[in-house]
Length: 131
Image (cartoon, rainbow, N blue to C red; front, top):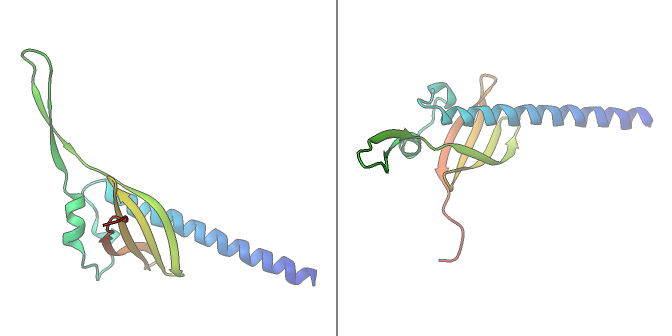
């Protein structure tokens, strides 16, 4: 009986270790979007939400004006970043990620392809609250 209990504990810890490694890999994939340009290897072959995602990946210009009397104005390119909030596994090869991009909640569906996690779908979540 003790052997069965020990075996169950060992198998559970191995499954937990795999899930932890998958979470790290998923975080790395989403973090890859934070450094432009994003690589095509971050997405599955059938990824079709490029237009919706591209508005988040397009850097926006910011003008900084000096307060000095004859100061200069500088133009810089700002780029937001995705921050993961939660990862839930639907199956061993599919995960759902809730993240935030500059206070906008977004959802990624991640799929394991060729031993790496890739973005299969992307959606902007509507703001929760009374309407």
